[in-house]
Image (tube, rainbow, N blue to C red; front, side, top):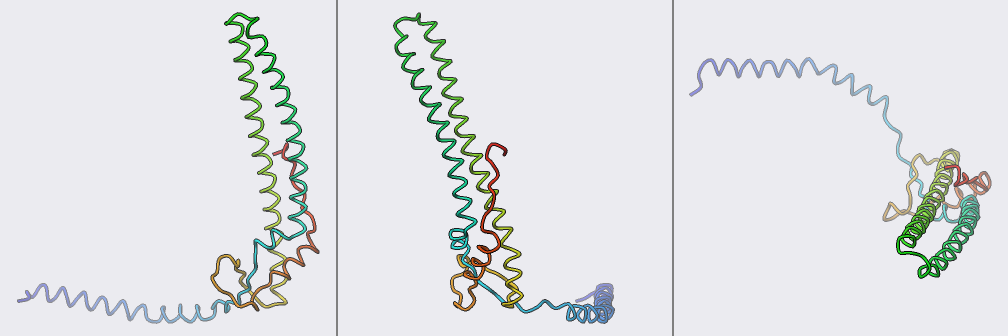
Length: 198
């Protein structure tokens, strides 16, 4: 059995709900019309093989060549440091019998500090090389965007997907060759920031 006060309360809730729908009706229709005017364009997809582009682009090859030059300089410095440490280690071994245990221990600790410093320097150089490489490759990625935007005007696509991210795409959607060709024409080289400055 429903009490009169509950019936009245339920009726009021229903009336309020209906009034809200009626009040929202025109504004909902207006919002719908506005949304129709601002409809997004249909998606026209193109596909690129990003790995292939980044592997084959002339700019990528120039980046690798510059990084190898920096690496060669670092390797030469590292070999020089290692040779000096090896010489010092041999001298330390020779002096082991000539020095007191305290003096030998002191020299050994100094030598170990030098070894640790060379290891830190090597790791730091490796990180700097990696940062320089990443910075150059980021430049290449950024340079690719206007090239794809320009190509989209002639080919009519408005979305580009990486081939590795989709399980299947029709061959006619691929624009890898065109992007690579335009990149090689417009960006044959990218200057790698020197590792010592980053």
